[in-house]
Structure formats: structure tokens, C-alpha cells
Amino acid sequence: MKRFVERAQEAMLTTMLAIVADWVLALRPSPAWERIRALLASLPKRDAYVKNYGRFVDAGNAQTWRGWFLSALTRTVSDSWTRRTLAIGLGAIGTAAFVARHGRLGANAWHARKRNIAGQ
Image 1 (tube, rainbow, N blue to C red):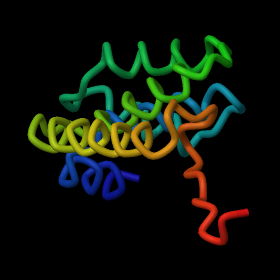
Image 2: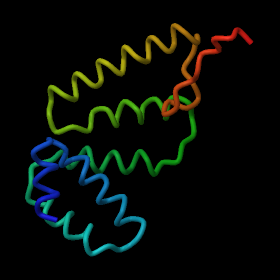
Image 3: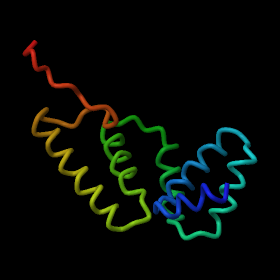
Image 4: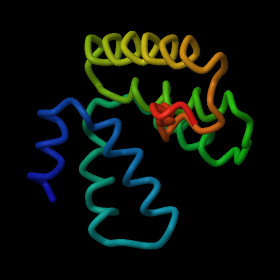
């Protein structure tokens, strides 16, 4: 477990691992994930982000903008400020391209819509 947490730290993803650990532990007890969460407790991570991410996912709101907001929120999970900035910038470009192509935001930001190449 310790090596797993070390790898997350090396990849600048301790915040993401904390989110996953909270999610797994919310579903069912797991000694392995409790150990991971304990190891993460002493590491630098974005605790407020972890808390707010979980709260937002648990909200259960099915509005279209929620899917797009969750997509943007997920892009910014890295512990690296540079990676977060790059990810949100590329996400904004992708969203703008989607809106330009389809005229509106899709109902599900997690699934790309296929273009109808056959013109049907």
C-alpha cells in the first residue's frame, strides 16, 4: 500500500487517490483502502477539493450543466498547478469546439457524440 501511495505522490495525484479512497470507503468497509486513506492523511493534498468534489457528486442533480461542470472539476484534480491549468484550458477549447459543432452543450459531457458522416 505504501508504494501505491508513493506512486500517486510521484504522479502528483494524491488528491485523486484521496477522492477514490473516500468513494470506495463510502460504498463498503475495506481495510486496504482504510490503510491507503491513513497513509494519505500526512501527505500534502487539496483537502477542500476532496471534500467539495464528494459533496458535488453526491448532490444528484441531473442538469446538463452539472455534467459539464463535473467534467471540468475532474480535469483539475491534479496536484500540479501547471497540469490543472493546461487541462482546464484544453477542456475549454474542446467544449467550445463541441458547442460550435452542435450548437449547444450535450446532455452528457462524459460521452462524445459521433458526427453523422453519412448525412442521415
